[in-house]
Image (cartoon, rainbow, N blue to C red; front, side, top):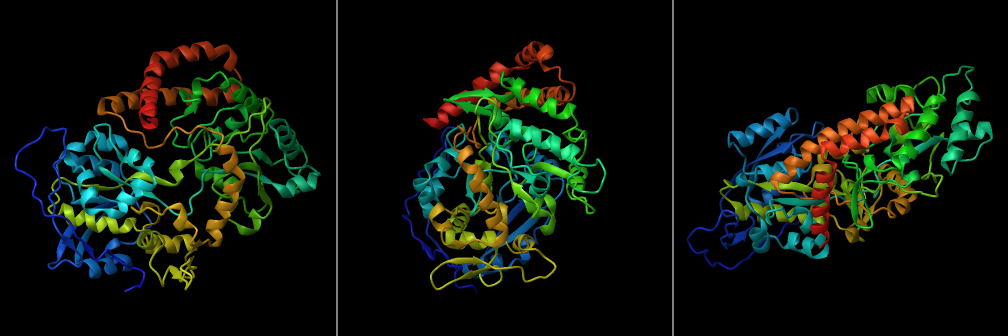
Length: 528
């Protein structure tokens, strides 16, 4: 087995018994104090569900989990659910057909947990008794305890913090080859950007003699690569979860109700009306957008948004013609970029079922992944095939051993990557040597992070009561649909001034004040 796959050999605990009797339903059953020693004297089999990872190998065959089983004598029967998870999830709870645990991030939301907490085991007593690594995480990063503490005061989930993650989500790219051909500098303000886009439209920068250039393209108002990123030039910046909530001086607001939205939309309408924005930005599927950006014959796009430039172009040669465009400064001097704590991790990466027959062992078993020396191997893949540990203790991410697979695909084939229930802290990250595809993103991130740091972020993993969650979801669903449709119309037709008062009244009718009340209460509680 891999030398760095070191487990906690013994978790020795007191043997005091929990007195018989019942407690109120709102209280957790105190965890019995048992001794858990790995490897177990007798083999134990547990059933886990892992959901929503289309490109992951069957965990039953992963080298990592085979090594874990040999070290612990715990065998996991993995059920993978790659399609239809939303429907399957509802049936699991409706039929009370739960596994012993749900393993992996991105499968549940806080609403799921609030709605189904009666099926789940509170973890706080088990953490105190069996999980030294998780306890250390909560001590060193107390905000993560807040992230996983539900509105009823219990902890039903374990969080995740991934290694080498950016502070911001996307970047804006611009065609430097076109700028150079037209004798233009990289724009720094929204007005300079406008002038550059006009030159892109009329100057034939791709040199094919056709007026086929698309100066500016984006993916409608989607959280990742939509036009929301340009809002920062007008003083509006939210987190990247797509709830359109922002915080200024501790006060929560809804971006699409802010009067500054009018300035954003008027600017974007000017670009659209002059043919500087792709006319299909609000109607085309992302595949059609990508086809335009990646047009093989000749570059068509001047500027847009994506994770990295290479991810946008899917072509290393084409990517060399583009550079990252730092956040634009707006007409009032605003220059913000959206922060992205959600890129660092999740607050729901492991959930324990009430019917699990070996809760103490399960929690001692999962706690081992919160030792970064083991967690890094679950994330990137095992030492030898995916990682190399030098004599200086540094970790190097190895290239793909399959010539048909990229480094990223190789990692997904050998580890759990973004779904891993792990905690890689900032100090441990310093021991990891970047590889090219990781370093590209982190280098770009340094351009945008100072502007994201100016933004008061609404914490991404907030908790609400079931009633609050249901009410907020209903309001948000209707309000976001209404607001995004109106914004798209206004960018196209420019009627925002004439329709603004009616629009704001409709937001009020949908429940804007109540939405902000719920959000503000949760934010204030989190900040206590």
